[in-house]
Image (cartoon, rainbow, N blue to C red; front, side):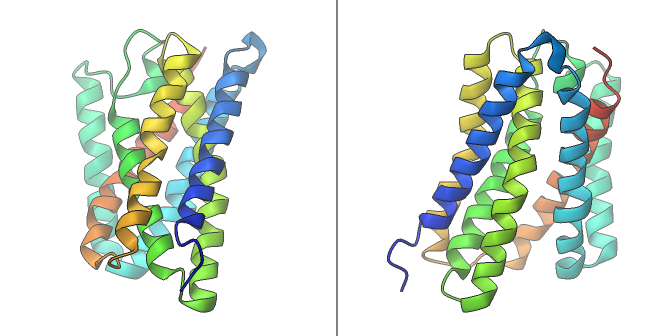
Amino acid sequence: MAVFPLGPPLLATCVAVLCGCGAIALSGARKARWLVPVSGVLLAGVAVFGLLPELVRAIGWPSTLGLAALGYGVLSLLDHNGVPVCPSCSHGEKFSTSLVIATAFHAFVDGWGMAATENQASVGAAITTAMLLHKIPEGLALGTMLRVATPRAAAAMALLFVAELPTIAGGITGLHSAPGIWIDYPLALAGGTFLFLGLHAIAARK
């Protein structure tokens, strides 16, 4: 039994929040507008090279791509109908909760997976290492996009905490049960939203 089983989820939360705060601070500078498209690359990269390949192994190509396309398509439809779902496209006037909701759910599952597998020797160590590494680009992308979408840095930081603290809640859940395969299906939807938001941030012109 681990001495401090919530250690990995807490560490992952701290990594994401610190990276996000750093991105928020830099995004407030006039010369740091390049961070918006860079954050889009990072967010899309988390989806394409991190989240979606894992889901393909778990639930297969058809389910993963179909649900990701559904998540992407829903945000695209809302965007075309004037609903501000893209933080980097809202020019600071309105904030869409889509990114925070998707990230919060993703963070919850991250924490759940880390805590549930912590005692599984090398498997648990590999999962925790992978989670910690992907929290770096996730935090940078999230912080940048939240800062662009909100009028004040303090508001962006508050939303950053809302999005990342579910990692700890997921860790608490993972102490009592391992996540079932059903969790991969909504995660595929979240992957599609990450891809949509990331690609729109890449195309943003400030």
